[in-house]
Length: 423
Image 1 (spheres, rainbow, N blue to C red):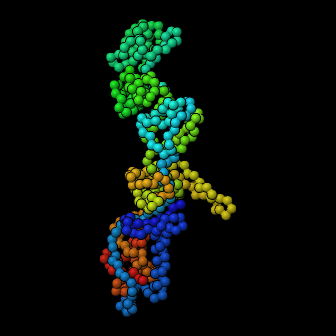
Image 2 (image 1 turned 90 degrees about the vertical axis):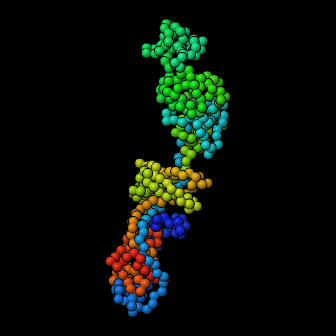
Image 3 (image 1 turned 180 degrees about the vertical axis):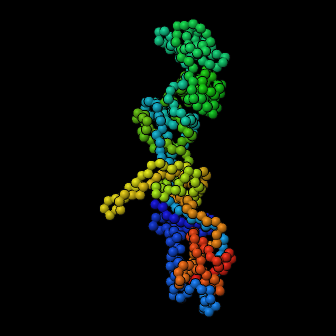
């Protein structure tokens, strides 16, 4: 649901109505009630719009205020939900039995363990590419079909940091073997952007001895062995598909989809980002405000205002449930999800989830003449007017109503003019 509320420059001193579905009232409704009351008063007194009545009229009670020049801002409020966003399954590719899981709500950073499968850690690294193949030095295959690592007894590492090829082996055309001969078949070095992504993470974790590039070298393998030692793993120098999982940054663990002792699966663990955000089911018919980058104000469950920004708008509208049935009015109003991010996470305080309201600017008028809505009176000949301090009445045109004030204009209205607020 949404409702329109208005503010004068978002003045914190202005009292706010308690939030809640049916208990809230818009400034427009309040102003309408005041005008109705004013109509009754003026009608009872038989006041008109002429300026010659003030001299003969009996003294009027009530306070006076000055016409001021200000900026009026109308804001509309919509309901939202504070949280961390939708939970997404982690792409776990390890196979075996789950032997350890993190607690729900725990934060995991680069280099930390996400879960253990067969008591082997699966580590979080940062990157956009998924782990889709094993990374390591090329493997030489002899004529008999046996495999041997390139850093084995075939020779010492090459001075250029590339993987050595056993003496007497034959590499594919274009591969720098450092020797000649035949009898074995060796693949070339593992290359690709996934290698650079992995090496970038190794370097960020403090491991050195290699150049961050697209080639997995003996230097990379040495760094992997030291990393594996720190994790309590066999020092193979190779990284399996199930050994790491990539994400854009640190993650917050969601609800586990598997129990300890069960076989690991693709939905074994879910995650979200660690930043709190707000999701609004905005009316599809009234979502012009939902533009990426638009500034909004979020009011937390304790009414604390926090600045937010529209980050994304859903492309698919969904009809609300419960709109039909007996006594219903047909299908529910179509809505679309709008995600609002919060830059200052500290301003959110202790709140991790809960209902909030999101306020956005509907209309705004700058440098206009304003008076309190309570100063408006209804003239006998129609329209609205103001009663001056000496009892005369002047006709005015009304504009934007905003948080108890109203925009006024007219030939006889000027800044500083004293007008009466009837009791």
